[in-house]
Image (cartoon, rainbow, N blue to C red; front, side):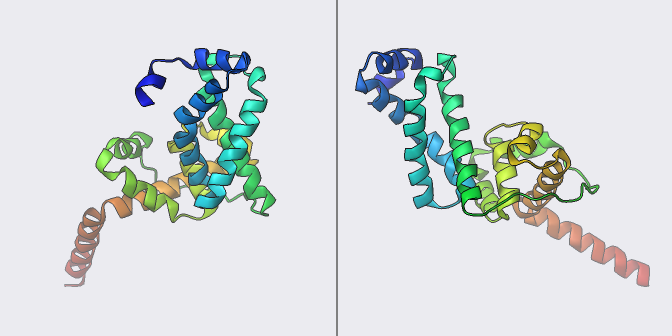
Length: 201
């Protein structure tokens, strides 16, 4: 199945859908369901809920497929539907996103954290760390890092100030670095303790 679908463009599959050929829907689902599920799961953090939302997303996408203007962007379009459905699910469960003060935080460069993502051996570890964050922080970090959504857009869809998004993200980056680099943190703590002892002499 994989080798067959790899040779068929999204455009051709969408044309099949338009002509009433059900194989178009089936192959699109096969091609995108895993990535869409991962996007949903990272937000709702529950496998059963994510599976239910996945079905809703594809039903919605297939029922509105004629509204897709750029046939080359099906993957991005359906992932956007998935994100919106996931956020709607949270709101239905009375989970809302709140503002926090845009306090000044010692920043870690974005490209440093993105370099961590590029380290394949640690992506799973990174995802596990993010999964432990409070829902609001987890959602912001996942949308920015994995869905590559600009912070301004995240603020808009969550209906919170851009400063709140930035603060959550920078705090999360600091915690991620601390957990990904425990040896480095231990060295810092040791050096600080040593310096404190030297001052007391």
